[in-house]
Length: 105
Image 1 (cartoon, rainbow, N blue to C red):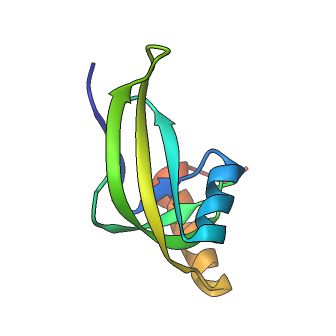
Image 2 (image 1 turned 90 degrees about the vertical axis):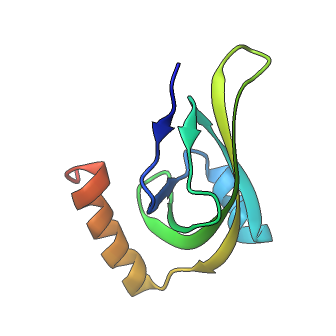
């Protein structure tokens, strides 16, 4: 059992519903598998499930636990700082592919 560290600039959503709630209501949470450490209090770039940069968010809380099904999960609560402009999204997405996601298909 151990913690996996997330990159300080990446907060990638796996669920369209979790992303929608963040963008619609200004606050939201996501659940990640495994124990992970997110930079609580810091601003990070949020990415869609399709790896596109979409917004700047502030991490409010990161809670790692074993759920009732016995799975290691991390819940991350965040607030929307602002959506990215089209140009910012394009540049951040290109950088993320080079640094984190690997080559585009």
